[in-house]
Length: 348
Image 1 (cartoon, rainbow, N blue to C red):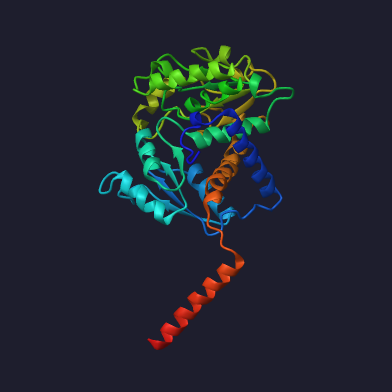
Image 2 (tube, one colour; image 1 turned 90 degrees about the vertical axis):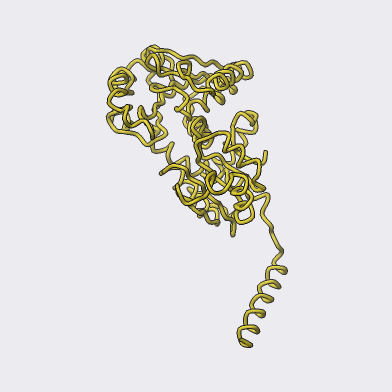
């Protein structure tokens, strides 16, 4: 697979290969032995919106692997305005070894990958977030409850599960294919089935197909207490997103306190249940401060795993395509370039 755009395009075996590689690089990093697989490689990072974890993780990942990341902040590119996505892709492909894009439209992401001659990594669209979902898969594998495998875990997401909850609407296409169970707990009007987006039927169909493929389950409930009863992992995310800040007060009234992940709610979950949030998290809102700092909270581990996930993806997609000249060729070209500059500068 040339690009990492949609985890749906990958088999469970292929996803686990990536997980194993990511964990290998994490182990190397912890030993202070991160392999410099991407020396002289460059990553062009396109951002249509501000980001902390995605930007920092990709930028640090390239540095650790020996390469360089170029941050193209919102408004700096002509993407889709004075220059077509096609021409942007063609141009960046000649200058960079890989493109990571965080843009709104899935169609624009597909267009970018269609015309790019180098790998494209989907850093997020409005409807999916594959790098975060892969990171979460890594985090779950690392923190698997004793005696369990991916085929019998339950991940419960409490909060807004409309299509704008792009992380969980990626996870519900992944975990059931491994045989796992995904439960959404949302107020009426705030679930995947309530969404009016044209993408709704596609994502519901995929979640159902994932269950058929792997034997897992996916269900949506309005009762968070019922939803967490068998949860191995309890996940939540923001109630308010970029662009709907004017709805914050109304949303808070809908979600608080029933859909907050707090001590009262997790008391109904198994004693081994662990807590996840992809961030940024508002302390005391979607998750109580007590749970965020709980000994079974995975929030900081999850954030760190973004770095290792990006390292794995970048090395996996860039390294096989890098030009690797022999020592002799490198020495010869170095000498030729030095001689050319020195001789012509003296003449000038």
